[in-house]
Image 1 (spheres, rainbow, N blue to C red):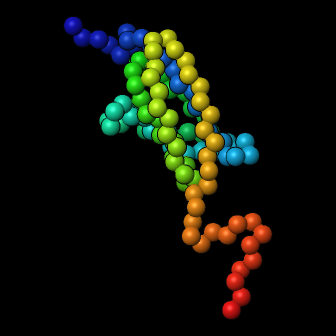
Image 2 (spheres, helix red, strand yellow):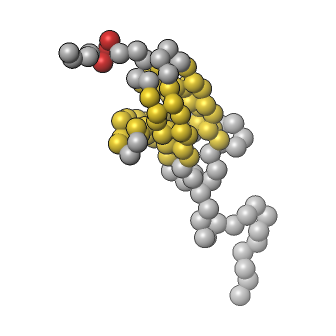
Image 3 (cartoon, rainbow, N blue to C red):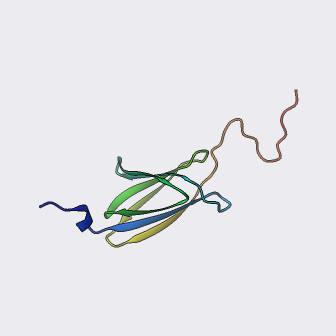
Length: 104
C-alpha cells in the first residue's frame, strides 16, 4: 500500500535565528534524518518546516557565524519552536573591540 506524503501526519518546527543582540540573520537551514539530508533551504531569520514525525537534526549556517545544531524528535500534530542565537566565527586576524594595532 502506497502512502502519499499529504496523507501522512505532520508536525511543525519553527525557528528564529538572531545575533546576540536580537537582529535576525539570513542563512541556510539544513534538516537531516540520521546522516541523510532531508531539506536544504534559505531562510531570512525565521523559518517554518512541516515534517513527518520522527527524529531530526536541524543545522543552521550563516556566513561569518559558527554553525549550530538542534536534535529533535517530532510527534504527529506536534509543534516545536526554537530560537538560535548565533555567535560570530573567530578569525585569527580579528581584534577584540578596543584592541589597538601593534606598532613596529
